[in-house]
Image (tube, rainbow, N blue to C red; front, side, top):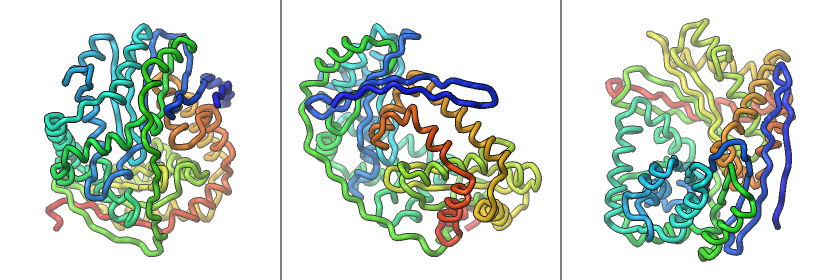
Length: 439
């Protein structure tokens, strides 16, 4: 059924600020492709994006890295786009494009001057219908992915922490979140061309995707173009997912990992937290902001400014579709020990669990979140991304207009309760991330 939403959020941030009204229309094609249209004629640009419901969690445990690999592979070329020409076509027509992969989804987009809307639709329909997946493309992208892994993980300071390779295998034992998005190079080397073709045929189909067109468009004309380019693409087989559940963590997991690229050790305290759609996940986002977002946040002010025990500290909730991860990372200053960092972090967590944050801090937190809400809808690319994500991962496209109300509904008591429920020593991974010389 076609649904049209018109919603706006009026926010108070010291002075009255009005968020951009995000109107949109959504409907399904006969092949199952979900379509979302957002018209904004204030600037002559348009973003065409496709999000596929496939991430690293959908991989065979013996073939990890496929989803991220496809993020690269599907730029190789199509039946009607010669190999190596994708980026040339985009740039020569005044556009830009990119893609990214997470544990749960893969996202592609192009932004063009609005007179090239049809070009963007054609290119994404080509990617979906006519990708060329052959041995030369696989071998080429295999080297690209290996170089990316070398740059971002193998040879990058703290790469194992940033990209999860040092954390996820310890935090997850059953669920496929236990491996990182970039996966195993050995698995990619061992894969056959038929395995890549099968992965494409299973996941990169219209009924496993959402198409968003946002910007300077005419709705009726855009619908006609979408039907012309996407309507005849065959529907894929239904995809069913059934992932093993994790047993609760009831005793602190203590692990040491080493990194040859660092001289300064790091402490990581990591907790398995609820799915991104649960209200508690929003509360944990707020706790992250309270603890480490900005120089006046509790951990930064205490550990970096006052005690001078840490050169850096940050906390963040990594929202995911099935389970999320709450991570706190800290680097000591001078000869300060990781045990001291742990003590100071735990002191702030204990305060959260036993005391209500001040009314002043609570209002400051709400103001920050409302400001972020306004800014998140400040660009066409950002709106397209939010619409796709909210539909696919939250099953509620209109969150782009209403998500702030979830944060507004969180009380100081909720913050205390959620901290007490999830951020306990016996429910976490304690990881010492040390220089290779410390072995």
